Length: 317
Image (cartoon, rainbow, N blue to C red; front, side, top):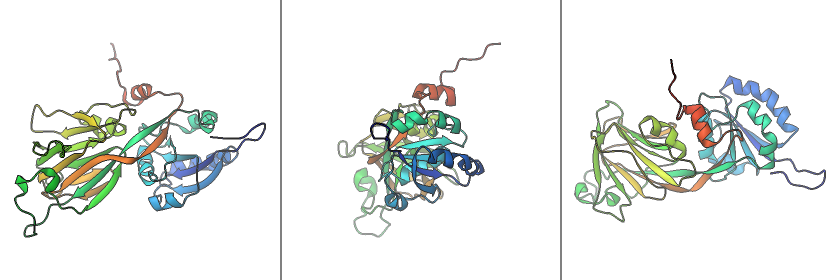
């Protein structure tokens, strides 16, 4: 990150994105800001709850964005800054800290490696999620929806669009009856083949999100370096419908055949939109991405073991 020769070194330019709703973050900033000012050029300080794509676009160029909060804070900043990718480093003030890998002490300890650009980074997949609602009864061109391929059953106007860092989840919602869904992957290649299933919903996750809701629902853990997407049903009414992993650039579509009044699409647990019968959700890898700076004292598998107790041995006695 820094440049220069001899005794002249340019300090890295950093942004501070802080979740000021957390009292411990506000307290930590009292010490961190003067400490960081001696080692970097702080070009912007933004309350994470105020950050938006518009603010990101107008922010000064930076080498690094330091996110103070938890994993949820980092998810929100990754979406907001996707059009202006700056490497994100998370200092954890939340519960798990799976994406926000650093404690405040570890951040200070590893600052020389971070500032030099030698800390390991990964480029993470983002999903572009769109919702198309079915034409209402009486509209021209509706025809027999069940007789048309999934790619043509919804209206052509996009009613909702959002980036997903972790996952896009269709959840049954109140009154919590199971819902009927139709899944089709790459409809242009297989226009007449669809998978119909009844479940409490479905999760479409990135490798980053594979250790979140996807994992809790029985889906696979996927390394962040793998260019893939997981499709994991929620409590399917079938013994044979197992989670699948497909390539990230696949055109994945889910159509709601019969839902509840409260059936909803939820993005990263933070944004949502209501669905109705006939709504079609289309998910593809975005051409945007985010870069995550890793704690030099942790590798991915060590992080799994530390945070999620992956491969932990049973206790004896």
